[in-house]
Image (tube, rainbow, N blue to C red; front, side, top):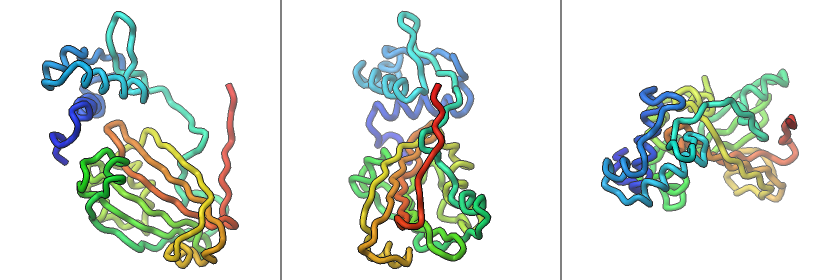
Length: 237
């Protein structure tokens, strides 16, 4: 992807994240100031500040009053909603796992999808639909859009051997995710693929995943309401 088509503040973010990802800037390394970034990228101070503020808010950078901005310490974190590989979930229950790929293609991003993946409108994205099975009973409809920058060989993978979740963690080192959980009714294609009544409720998880360089994927995971439960163990400190 040509970064020049991105907003200028995102170009600055990608520049900083690339330096960190490549190991050129290690933890506690001081990053260029707003003024230095203004000169390097020929942008306003407001644009440079926005890039630094967003990276600071996401925990990539840390600001010290009077000293500057530094690469943050990568402290391990636990999530209230764990991102798990569905194949592992099924096998841990002692059941058989399999999947079926319904769609694996390239397409142009809609305006909404481009915003979600932080791409220009009509940029090329990868689109996959996979149905996951437990003991030959459909358990999950996974529809995923991928930023090709982070997984350029996504369409060439054999997902009968490893799920998209495992593959993306391997090639893009996912660092964070957001989740939205909703009760919905399935569309006809989803109901048919999941062998369920279209009037029966589903649990839909919309998950947006990042690596250190940007948004990797947007996934919609749909489960029959009577075949799936969502839970986690919380530890309070």
